[in-house]
Image 1 (cartoon, helix red, strand yellow):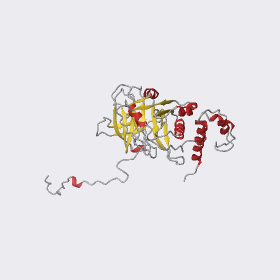
Image 2: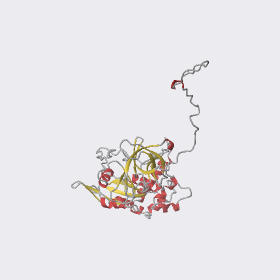
Image 3: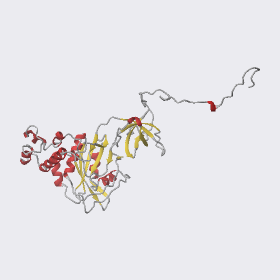
Image 4: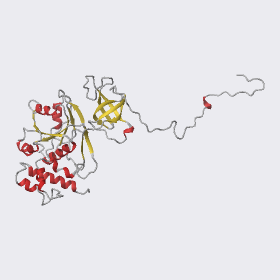
Length: 360
């Protein structure tokens, strides 16, 4: 534009003349208000792998009825990550969570977990009885399935007792499943636990047909329940899961003939839906060689053994149940507690001693 006579020429401005001075306090005021995520979709965590969560959700819509798809809509498996606002909150298999973002289920989609639904139950353990750090195994389970082989490897009653305490402390219904009945008689072990009123299922693998005898009875026990399978490596836990859920393809292994222990084959916790069981789910866990109970109140341990608990009425005040004046000894010697009580009392006292020992 040509300037009028007597006027100074005007400068032509372009984008190079724009200068942006960043605000030290941010471009906008910070707020403590978080988004409500009212449109978030519910899902159930099926697996966890290096910070990525596999979640089963229903597609969005007005007919959405929750994570189990009871409304008849097609369900989707979605890969998700945890939102930063959840902080250090632990998300584990079995958790019900709220998701936002891309829940299409396509291979390159990634949703975001923004909320955790309050848990109805939590199964946890510690590395040993003096470790203060709890490890949450699964959430929102109904039943703890304690899988024990009758032979190869030999059964470990103390491990069974520990799992029973963990189940009752977590509010789960215990179920004892004995495998490899073709190698050893199950009656002695069944007799030792019959007074505890723990339901039991006996199974055996049939190599000629490749089937598992007793599977139908186990399936009935799992109907409509979210069941966690726990046991030593080599007891046949993953073999049972593969028989219950066709296509599960959980890794199985053999027992070391020198040590008598199984190898860790399943390395992750995974939830699998049981077909034709009215919403039954199986959660398979890696084999464990110990089950620490540092999180369990030491004063409530005996209460979880119904055949021993009545004997504490004759204990002196403040009895630790591991001293000469303890009334449980006379209770067991009188045979009122039934068969197997002496062994369970020994197991309880070993547990009490381990829980009372100072950390190294």
